[in-house]
Amino acid sequence: MKRKGAGEREKDVKKRKLLDELGESWLPYLTPKDDGFHQLWKTKYSKLVLRTAEKIPKEVHEEVQEAFLTLQKHGCFFQDLVRIKGKDFVTPVSRILVGNPGCTYKYLNTRLFTVPWPVEGYEINYSHPEISKACKALIKLNCYLHRESVLALQEQNLAETKGMEDSPVIDRHQDYATSITEMGSILQDQSPSHVPENDHSHLKERTSYNLSLLNYMDPQQMPFLKQEPYFGMGKMAVSWHHDENLVEGSTVAVYSYSCEEPAADILEEKAPSGRDPAVWHVGLKVAWDIKNPGLAVPLYPGDCYFMLDDLNMTHQHCVLAGLPPRFSSTHRVAECSQGTLPYILDQCNAALQNLCTDTHLSCPTLKSLDVDDIKRVEETHNEVEFEWLRQFWFQGKRYRKCTDWWDKPMAALDEFWRKLELMTSLLLCEFRKEEQAEEQRKERISCLLPILEERQELRQDWLARKKHQQHTTGAACKAGLRNKCVPLPPDDARLQLPSSDFGNSVC
Image (cartoon, rainbow, N blue to C red; front, side, top):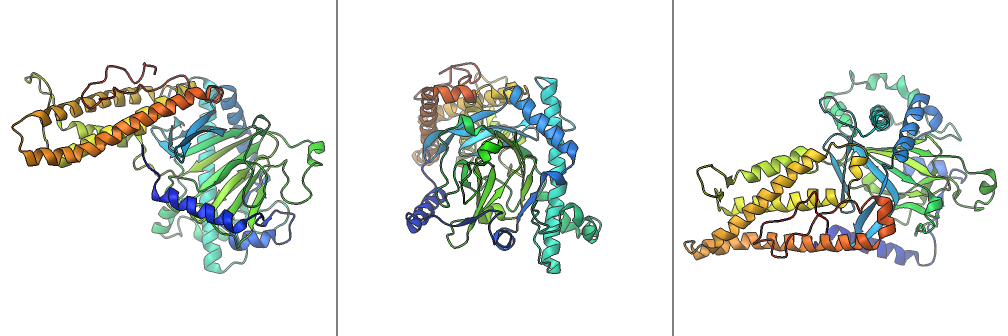
């Protein structure tokens, strides 16, 4: 089992320090009805851009909101069983990942696999024509948000170079800054034909969203939501965090849709000060800071917001629950250097280059016992098992709700895994041979042993997670997590070949 990393320990220390400094008091935060709200946004949160619903084309709203409701109707949203500080929790928010074929996104030790949106060159069989239509709407939204993100970044750059006083804040209550759309004429000199090639490429890289994490939550079905701990902002749907595993400096774009406006009689019950608890908000704060007030920005149906540039790194954000159910589509430039199907297939193919299966041989053999080759093969073995196969099957048959696209790739990875198990067994057989020099044997065993120990610990860890999953039957049923699981290999898996099948066995 992997121990808590330095990053997690540092975060725990910062959190304890912040809570100790607060004591029993709350930090201040501002909402649009507070004096100084806009000035605070402009000076401390200028890289947050809000695009209100009326600024967005009507057809975007219609198609995207229909897509949300379609995916919900077909049961495509699932709660995740995530791991935080070594403990498993079922998320209050239900999610589905949609994006480029073969991409994955990992958060809180859980890897999600994209339901592919339609991309030229890929054959995608959706389980229902309505799901196909929904995915088309989401990739159209992705293209729209990409264009608007580029404009927002160009506006930000223009403001910095021209010394403009207004930040790219867009507000429904006052004409606080020029909207993205209205900036078109000002930005003519900043259009792609006038922007230096390197700058334009950089803008595209930071806004070329390769996936979207869709969220859904009905607060009325979640009576035990956590209270926001620093400012007293009320119930949180998502706690304070930085979005994980993104390309550094990339923008995050969010389309928000709360299904209905709160009833008038409920609105009358809102708190006399602070945010309106009936309305969904995004909360922001400077990371690990108690000097600057926080910001709570209301989100009405169809609003979009953009976290530009390094805002996700320098600030933390949370989602504050309102009363009506809410969907959101959060578009990201995920860091996928080790999170795509082509990557892991390449890793497996490279590892299998060390396996000799010539027909004239009575049994397979290893081509090389070099320490570097051993290390590469066995680390790939761990990666394909724990980052891909177990992650995929632990989540059950959820992806088949939408498409069978992942069936063949996972079958291929399963076959790779079996060959890697064979290679481990062949390697151990080689270690038993007496003709090896003692020094060579020790060097090879010293290389292999830590990897095998990690493998065994992780297998026990996954078994524990499965048991926890079974104990949380109610939540697991909602999440669709009981449908499929990965078998725990034999206790002495280093010496035995697997007799069970990843795809069909039940533990």
